[in-house]
Length: 457
Ligand SMILES: *Cc1c(COP(=O)(O)O)cnc(C)c1O
Image 1: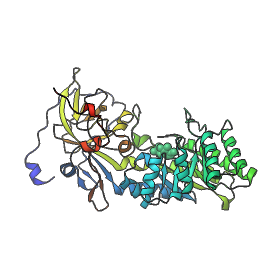
Image 2: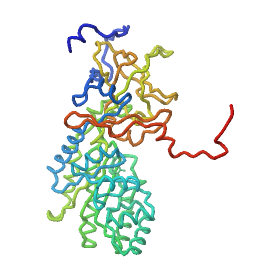
Image 3: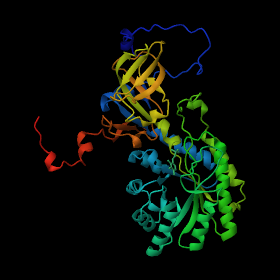
Image 4: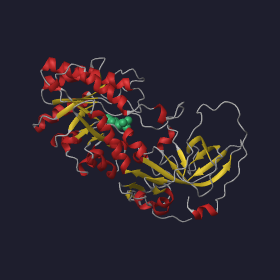
């Protein structure tokens, strides 16, 4: 602490609290409330002073560390690995380009994301195009560009066969496969089912038609999957299909895409343990996947590439949301509630995660159970139903952790506009990667019919 700060201690309201001499609560002694005053060496206070509050902050260092770790973990277990960045997880261009600089291709689930990847400079033949909604026009664009088209259903398959014929091209395709991996409910709404023969039906149709070049098999078995063994089962079933295609059609499948879904370190609501304790390490997923593929019976020189579309596990902990206390209130039952300046409109994942929240300034050792509300005039705007925090005063700052996945892409201008997003680079310099919205951004596409232009009140 600097000397100046030592002289005058900031005021902290007193708390009266019953002494609990019994057992610890089910979480034991939680260390959730240590202050977080800096992110990558940059002070939270100075970031808020410069860019406003609330504020999303991304750590470039953490993103690079995450993808490098994941690559190392997979590459030490399997010889042919390719990551593709899942655009919908976070498609801010600066984030995508960080992953592309680290060698990741692009995984997209709409033509909008497809165009984003192209304009970020991803070679179209390194774009994996997933999703159930590809129009004829979308398919034509990806056929022309030789992108990798992952077929979701039979109607798409037939349309693509027709388009390939019209265009006199043989598109490179994979089929999406869904299956029973022992985790329920099964995600069976996407792709062709393994157990009931749909996957083979699609494969046979592609091979017999000879209009499409089946080079891959794709699956994405779920999200925030806590069971690594499910990936072992998925990889075995995919390998079984690939080996079956080899036997039946003498064709080598060049890649098996295992999708994403590895859990991030976030804590699911209702979970007994913190995410940081409960969530498997990426190496546990890798061990399962690599083991299944290596033991499936491929000839060594015919091992398929392993593609991975990991999203949340690579970005969640690289994103922070900084915010400021608006006010404190006692609820009618006596509980303390604190109103923050950020709500569920920008922290969408608060609906299913208990986000870790840290005060951004020093405080004494007293804590109290608190409800954290957002600023929206809506009952659903709850950041944490119950979090143990030291008393915060209006104007104090907090840091919300693990917000990097899905919040930027799912946030909305509901009641309030969306704030600045900055990235801290490897030298500790901060850069705006998306500017705070203005009213003009939101109203730009609105039109007012002539008869509604004027009114008198
Ligand atoms: C969303 C998605 C991903 C990324 O999922 P995470 O759970 O964030 O890892 C990967 N592949 C496909 C097809 C997806 O839809």
